[in-house]
Image 1 (tube, rainbow, N blue to C red):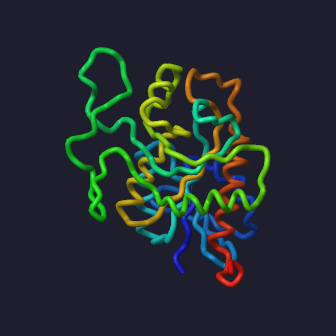
Image 2: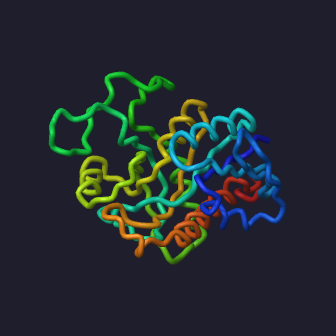
Image 3: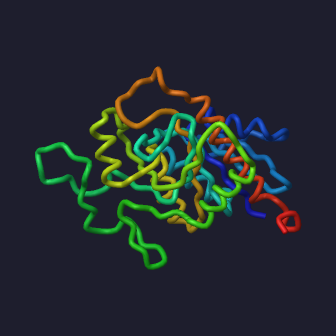
Length: 252
C-alpha cells in the first residue's frame, strides 16, 4: 500500500496532527527529517520540508523518489485575504496555486503586481501547458471540505479557492489589494506553488490545507495567531486524513 505524504514547512505546523499518532518513528531523508506512522493501518509519512520554494521542491522530490506516495497533503499557516472574507484562525482548501513571481515584469515604472505570463511553458502534462497557475484536483478539494464539515468542527470558517505563492511576503495594503484584484485568492504562502509544480510533474494529487495566522497586508505581528492557525489547519487535515484512510466497508 502506497503511503500518504503529509508535509509542512516547519514542525510547528505539523505538531497538532503528529500528537494524534501514538506510534511514530523519526527518519532522516536527504538532509530532512520525517516521521513514519499509520492511520487505520494506512502508512503515513510526515515530512518537515523547510520554508520556501527551494526547500519544498528539494525535500518533496526526495520524499516522492523514496516513498512513492499516492497522495500529498500540504498543511500549514498562511496569510488570509480579508477581501475574501477570511479572518485569523480560518482555514482554506486550495483549488489552484498561482506563482505570483513567475512571468514578465510589467513595462511600466509604476509599481504593479500584474505580470505578463511567460512566453513558454514550465511543463506540459496531459496536454496542459503550465506557466504560473497550477490547477489542483477539484474533486479531492471538495472531499476535504466535505470531510471537515462532516466533523462539525467549530471556531473558524472554512473556505475554498485560489492560493497565491511568492518568495516575497506581502507587507503593504496596496500590494494585498493588487493581488486580490488580479487573482481573487483566499490565502498567500511561500511554498504552495512549488509543491503543486512538483506534485503535478510526478502525477501525484496534492491537497493543500492552510490556516490563516494573519491577514495579508500591512504587517502587524501583534494581531498574528500562529498557534491557532496550526491547530485549526491540523484539525481539518486529520478530518480529511481519517476519511481517506477509512476502510472501504466503513465508507459504504
